[in-house]
Amino acid sequence: MKPSILCFSGLDPSGGAGLGADIESIVAAGAHAAVVCTALTVQDSQKVYGFTPVDPVLAQKQADKVISDLSIDVYKSGMLGTLEMIDRVADLIRKNPRPYVCDPVLVANSGGALTDTAADPKEVIRAFRRLLPLATLVTPNLPELERLSGSSDVERGAQSLLEAGAGAVLIKRGHATVQEALSHGKTESNATQKTSLIKNTLWQAGEDPIDLYVARLPAEFHGSGCSLASYIAGRLACGVSLSIAYTEAELWLQSTLRAAYQSHVQRGADNNRQLVPDRASKF
Image (tube, rainbow, N blue to C red; front, side, top):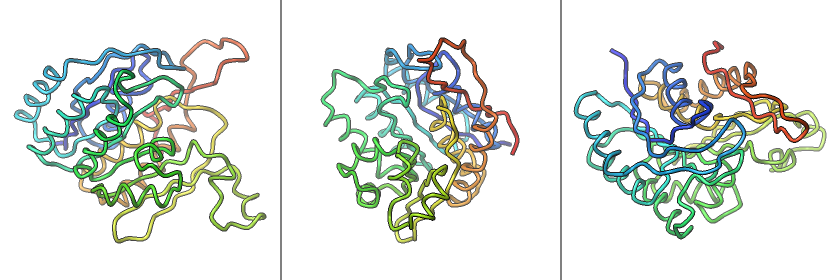
């Protein structure tokens, strides 16, 4: 019997991110994906234009039935959309504790809000921070880390999330400039050799951080963050340790990005070349 992941995320009609990416990544990791849709988005392969949240009561009923029927091994969340949805997911995990991978999606990489724009931004951050003590792993990119921790310093930000209760923090530096990614005491010659790399870091309480350097590829990718978090969740469900799951996920994601394909029609010079990772590729 395959282990099962219960995912909470939004539906991307273009198929590149959200629940589509979760399902493909979890299957690639060797697990079964059960899904609860938190929002219906209006987006294409390039940008999010808006969304309509799913009724949180309906989402909770879906999750309750899945949990009563399947043996859920790990939870994973991406886009939650509204304060009520965040709170209901938190309540469900408290009542039915399992390892939990939290991808704190606030804004799409390509632009466009993925949380309630009418809500007080401070309330949104407070709501997400209530998820941290439940999370085995939280996977913020740099903008999300700064908003969740209140610090632009990576180490301080990571420590803040750990102190708030997160079991581990994976910081994705894809948003960093080359200079930012290669700071912290590297020599100029060393930095020159590594200008095509991104440094991602896994922080775990009481342990040395684990740095992995991955290639910075010459394109933008649709759903890469969803894919990384979901693959880690899948490997955790298969019984792999977090450190190994993280390493495997980075290797797998690099393979999917190198095999990424264009799913849209070229529209001229303003096209931002956002490609879809080929999550069916083998590494």
